[in-house]
Length: 334
Image (cartoon, rainbow, N blue to C red):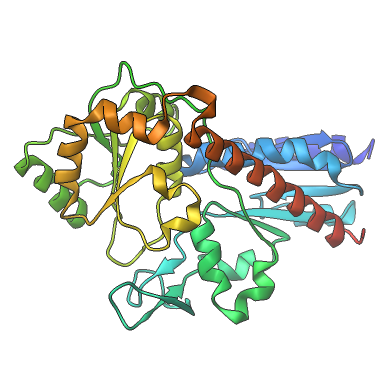
């Protein structure tokens, strides 16, 4: 290890000069840990959140190895030590037949609401993820859908749900203003029609786009965050947006999402069909203080909301510890 780590660090630095993907390497107990300094901006906060949990828990790994986090390069390092691959799955799996990029999806068994059909199980980059030792998914709904297909049960053993509890809990109601959306493309037909519907109901809103760092600052200043799905086909709840907004004390008003109860926090969200959302928003604006108190509580750390968030954080910790146990098994330790 005394020689392997300096060699690895040198080769990573050399590679960074010739690639847009910038990696960093750290020595964590028995592990040489490779991760990206510049992950994809749309998931950067979640990426770094998972990285920081890994940094703490990798001390439980019992055998010297490389840990490649979201890294599909440097395979020749296996001549020095075993390589463990940890990757993210951040796409919707709950997809209706006919949805974009669903040609190779598996047939699931979860019923589509108001339909005789079942959802597909769409796993983006499935062939690559099959080669991973650990796959981290942000959504219990995704895992519930994957579990519905018997052929995926072997793959399911390597998936661990880490909910996006990204920011410190802040539930103060004072000093907030406005209604915000976070549509990457507000000209998308479905979202464009929805924004036009808000205007018809004389609801002022601001769309936040192109902000990937410090988005929690916007959540902490907003009274209401609105979430609707981008398409009619991809139905997994956008938890990477919804849960961080909720933890930041914004009231989240969301288009009804199938199997939302699996999130463990659905009761703290205001749900409605997309055509009913404008009236729900107007009602919430009119009764903001009362509704905010009903969701987040007025008794500080003893509120049901705080307790539920703490429970989810604890479940994240336990999920990562189980993932590390699988790492040890994959290294031949029992």
